[in-house]
Each structure stands twice: as C-alpha cells, then as structure tokens.
Amino acid sequence: MRNAKKIVFLCKRTIIMTNKAKPFIKWVGGKTQLIETIENSLPKDFGNQTNLTYIEPFVGGGAILFWILQKYPNIKKAVINDINPDLTTVYKTIKTNPKELIMELRSIANEYLPLSEERRKEYYLAKRDRFNTKSLEPVENSALFIYRYKRLDRPIISLYLNALVHIEPSFS
Image 1: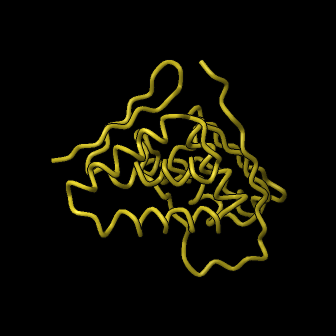
Image 2: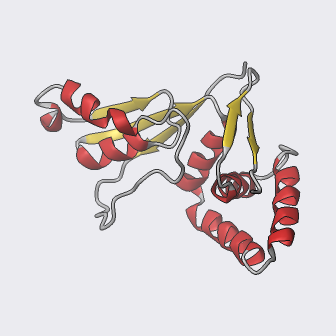
C-alpha cells in the first residue's frame, strides 16, 4: 500500500469569507454527520486557545476540515492527509493553482455541455482513459478527477489495496 500523502494548509485569517466553504465532493465515509459529536467533545475553551494546528488523517471531502476552520479562526495551521493520491493532488492544486484549475474545469464544461447524450458518453470515456494514464500534470489530473466525480449520477467508488481509486459511470 502506498504511503499517504501529506498536505499543509497555512490559514491566512486576513481573508474575510462572505460564503462558507464547503466540500466540493461528497466522499464515501464522510464525517458530516459527526460534526455535532466532534464539537461536543472539544474542550470548552477550544475557541479561546491560541496557535492551534488541526490535523486531519482522512480528509476525504473535507467536511470536518471546512467546518472546523470556519468555526474556529484560532486554528492557524491545518495538516490534511488521505490515502488517495488523486484526492491529495486535488487539494494541493486548489491550494497552489486555483485559477488554473478553474480555467481547466471551465474548458471541460465548455466542451462537454453542448454535446448530445451519446457524445457525452464518448467524451466521458475519453477523459476517463486520459485520467487513468496517471501521467498528467496536477491541474489536469485534478480537473479530470473533479469532472469524473461530478459527472457520475451514482458514483461507485472502490478503494483497492494499492490505494488507487476506481470510479465507474452509471449511464442510466
């Protein structure tokens, strides 16, 4: 099994967020339903502690990450991990190249949306094959990961022992 990759986010608290950040994907095994339990288990003075570091060993869609960073601005650093290398690449890309990622996603949308249903299937399969080469630059890899996940009506996600993610479409 591959080693999990680590990503470090340094939070800049000078940015005022007008919209709440939320997970960009709904991940199997997500922890959204645990937020209340986690909050109740935190020390009563958690919001008053200083220079905190949040460590998330299994970030997945990031529900806990987004919630805790917005709820507790006293967290100055977040370290996130996941066993899925494509998912960690997405988070790194969001951190380092957000504009390029948005441009790549727009490009995919502009190519995909005008197509007929049959051509969309062909387009999806071509993008899936390209993604599965595992030889892409991080921005393209991340855009295809997000596209493939968002394109699926009912994604079936299976983690194999080698920690690669296999995603199959449902064209029903």
